[in-house]
Length: 349
Image (cartoon, rainbow, N blue to C red):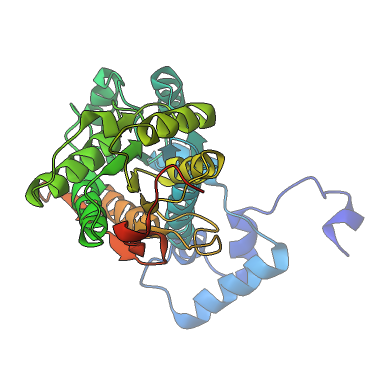
């Protein structure tokens, strides 16, 4: 006779039911459920058999009340729909699931206030730890309070200003310098730089790398060839058109992220010109367009795994000095960055 036949289908099996069916004590059943030692193989097998027969599921709410741990991690990114953050999210999720926990993910949408609300919501749900990409301009005082109260945190993509925590970054400056030097090696001396908001840490670092590459190669820095702003297609079209109208127009473009790269491709088409281009960050279809887009590729998966490993170490009580891990980039040559300056005719289709 099943539980449904007996009319008690609404009652979920408890650990006492598991112990009774397995013929062991409740303490033994609990040790098996929590992967603790000092249980015989026969008793462990009996408990696992009882769990399968009864369809037992551990009561994590009760466990939370006893231990204070929720087996959950909070992840805040800028936009989970962005390919970079989507890959980072998946990497963190895989690690969290592998460790038997659950991941709560949210997007700040570049809003410092939205980020504050979401992080405090995570904390009110008593997540065990946080992995955070903070919007620029965020007030970090509330984070300092939560961190001091015992919430472990790891910051990714952008470092915090006030919170003393582990950080995982990309070598933005070095990657940008490598990409621009690759264009310079092709004979380009007038290279436009089109990237995201000037207040953004990653944009600042990539513009700095662009400038270093030009200076180290003996090329002149021209502020008129640098555009850092919130990205809108019509604006990128106009900016590139203005640059091309200069008596000494650019023959190449360094695009500071995947979104700016896509917009630059559209702007070149609408301005009727082909320029050499290197983009920071790989993106979908970059290897399909003609020519393929040469990119400085980040490692969002590696960033997610590294961040989760650092967080897990803190959750396990690690007292090691704080770490800032900087992941290297990789130049992927696909054609757009290999067009020599001699083949570019700015302003002509």
